[in-house]
Image (cartoon, rainbow, N blue to C red; front, side, top):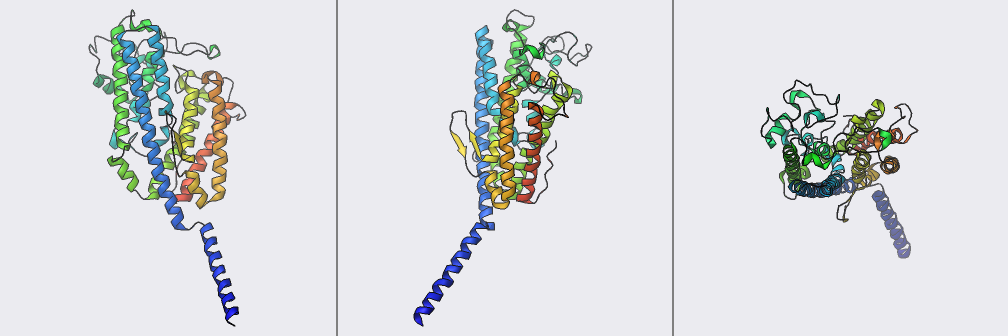
Length: 408
């Protein structure tokens, strides 16, 4: 009887152990909560590293511009352009941190994103343009800041800041990446089929009218850019008040913010404002980086910023990797079916935007595309980005119970 009882206890114990294992497989709430915490922490680490990279590359841009202004020549002009393009690589991957009133675009922080990356801009407010282009009225005394020495005898940071967005016109952009882009490349007046960017000559900074003011404007614009990126970066560094505040949020509230940024960038901003509008209007002016023809890279990098969060990994400019618990890790614990679908959609997005990046010259790629035909490269990518945005919003609801609007 004792042997039988011992066997009975052993069997019973095995059953309970088996049940315990099965409960673990079901992903108890404690495991989900732990994963959420790790995901939010990894996100914050990625944000901080990404902004540090963006700031470092923008400082390199300033160094290149200062060197060019000190002794302008063709080689230094090209070096400044190359530095601008390099600065866009990390910055393009920061765009997923928008849309939830954080340090980049929150009112409490001065809505810095508008200073950094506003577009499309009316270049006629900044410098000379080809006849018949630009939106400023000839009679506007604030037209063409570089050449308007009567109204603005001295250019300063405050002058540029105070005029940006004047008249409640969002295209009145006087600073940021794209103002600098225009000052380096000039207007792109070539036909898309020529596959050329703007053709500004370095002599605009040597022998052209108001060359010294143009140099001054260029330096002021990049100084503001560095200042603003420094402010955003400081808010995410270790020990910063905002970083601590974000980490102290309930994990559902933090994840709601994270996925609001990702969903809105994917569906509303990137697919909608930056791609679909350009296809619909068939207009170079609707390109994100229309002067340098760098829009193909902008699109890829913006998509990559979303993918970084989905997969919980960011590759720094020095090649090192910040990685940890991903959105997919958390979603898999909550709803495996949704996680598998999002993983597939995200991979499809990256494949499609890579095609756009490899083909270059976005203004040429959109020729002949229409918004009702999703079989060509740009609109095919738009469709996948829209789907990804909707799935990200659904992931947010599944994980946190909160609704997310993926439109902007």
